[in-house]
Image (tube, rainbow, N blue to C red; front, top):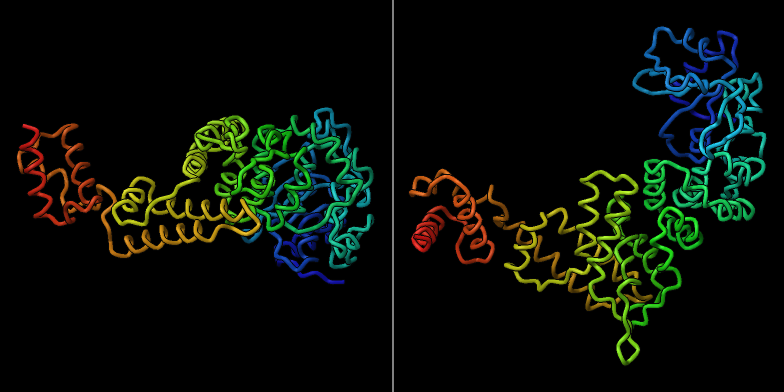
Length: 447
């Protein structure tokens, strides 16, 4: 069979081959090419040792990204190509990185150390596909299976457990029974993985098209990195607005919102505070008063633990804090919230609200969904009309108020804010004469 390779990759393979070395495209790029997808990254495995690779590509930009493990990165025509020497791995005392590697002369040795059969295929134009572990068969069956013994693969590198779930979520592949059982059994090893790596794999998992099935099938594994989810598993809310246990609701909510990292993370965590504030009224109906604030507090601890950026933390926590937002579709109310949150966050909240409603019941409440549509329509109409939402868009500025006799300082800012509040409430139009008149009245009232 023949795979189409980008020119820089084909040329790199040919460069190594001309120098007498074996060289193959390997791993995820081969998998994606066989699936008819455009690979994001290109990796090459070769019999050449690192110093030999460096000598082969002296005219290119070459970065010694991991000489200890036999890896250099070659940049050709703007394409980064990671080139690694055939190797076998030593013991993994930290359940993440090999303590040492041994370079090999055999491609088969290198493929045998890889995680999943679909990632353990190699391709070279002159030899074609090399598949020692049934990767192509598993690819056609859409099955994820470890190379060799599953427990050994996961004990070597615990991050592979999350990679398994991420691949299943993104590719829509089922997980072979023994591989899934080993992932559940050894999930506790994820505690040894750096928070940054956990975060990145988790977000990619959550953004997968098939994340719902993965979340529902592996709550125990997710619970290792997010123990706050475990009390939600099987938690009956005893509420007529909820047909599912709390964890199922959270998983469904993730699947119902557009696949953007912050929004999906917000949906996974938006109700995690409910078990802490759950009460039942005399009629047996469950209530979780204040759960938005509690959930946001718990989520803040999680996001800090997983080392999210400050900007992403703020975005996610805002969505969680206001996920129950329900407003009358009145222009002055909507303008206030548009001003407070900004249009982008406001419309994100509309997505959050819809996802929440769709995931609460098998058939969502049409009246509640209609309210969200009305809020969004009102907001879009206000933006279309050019509504003034910020101090920057006010028709008057600080210099105008100083010209009226206002003294520079904190009071100037307060007066501008008061004028904006009046515009948002519809008391004054955002027009210079009207705002100057209003400013003079407010200044007199303060004297």
